[in-house]
Image: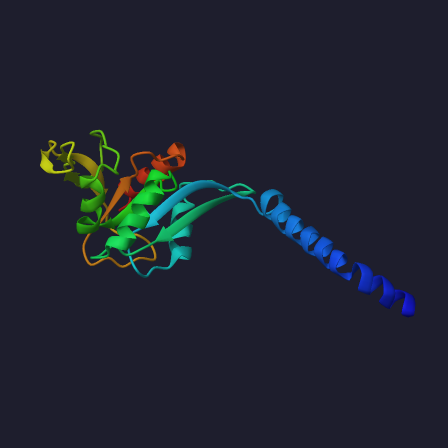
Amino acid sequence: MKKIRKIWSKYGLYICLVCCMVGIIGYFANIMFFQNEKDILNVLVLTSKMDSDLLLEEIEEAVKVDVGEEILIKYMDTSGNEANRAIILTWIRAKTVDIIIGEEEQIDFFAENGCLKEIEEQDISGKSYYDSSVIKYDSDGDVIGREDKKHYGIYINRVAGVRFQTMPVISLAVNFQNKENAINVFELYINQK
């Protein structure tokens, strides 16, 4: 017992440091190699409350999720909240949003700031296009006008797990990464009854 106390008093601090380092390295190795799932679709819903499990079930009708892959659903309310808008702009610029779903007044901000992809004319099964125009600025940051109106989304009937006050709009982020899956989900909502 004396021998153990002598070793502990002499090397105890080093033993603790080595154990902590092994734990930290093990933690990060676990995250990097074992819990690292690939995002195959990133959906942003502009609301404060929702049932993401119902929305995920609906989206999985259009997107096949394999082992090691996941669909990320984020939701955030932007109604009168500049801080939340700034966070979402950062997500869009960081290419971590593929699809944006929200009410027209919420989508307007992102369309006007050039965050949404223009949609080409197509058969949209009796649905209506959401049209908007991008605001133009001069080199000093002053508003000098607007571009012509273009299609930036489509009005859809409903979104599983979400209650909107008005008819929701589905749009694609201007720099969306998961193109095939995003387009599949977009078409799912176009063909929705």
